[in-house]
Image (cartoon, chains in turn purple, red):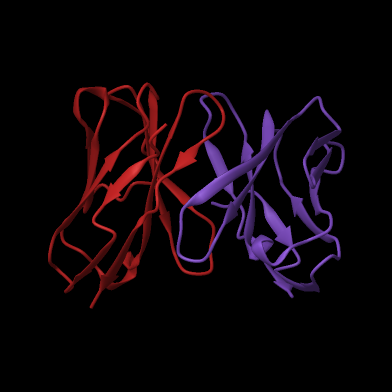
Length: 111
Length: 111
């Protein structure tokens, strides 16, 4: 079963613009992670935010978490063509580091 | 450090045939995961190992899928017999703690 639901399913922007992707989930979590997947390749970890954190930054990435609304957002600032990829949120629901992935948002950055 | 290695990268078989995938995790990572990713969807966990013991195989179709982790290091995932709906990318990941590191995946096409 998939826990996270990303929104939008697809997003197309111009280089230099900001991209925002949202993730909603259903149950309590220990942490929420965002991963990127370039076409035909494995996933790369981007950022992890714990349930007691509200915001986290890493380079051009900003992640927020609202546990009361069971939602998270990923903001990519000053996007580049190389940011073109699928982005997945994944929730760690219980103990044991078991991740449940959403269906992903496809981001296309046009140069 | 070397990443997660998987082989083969591509495999085409006919239905009812058998197939095996191999994964070599990052050295020192105790936890190993196998995921199935169907086109357009997020990865779905099939099985999770901690060292050479199974932590979670609740979503593994045990009538046709099997997996083992040899001496707590390398792992193999087998499908026998394959069905058309098994066409997917099979991803292996390993982790020392919460973040997972993914291999490039094996793309399986069942005809």
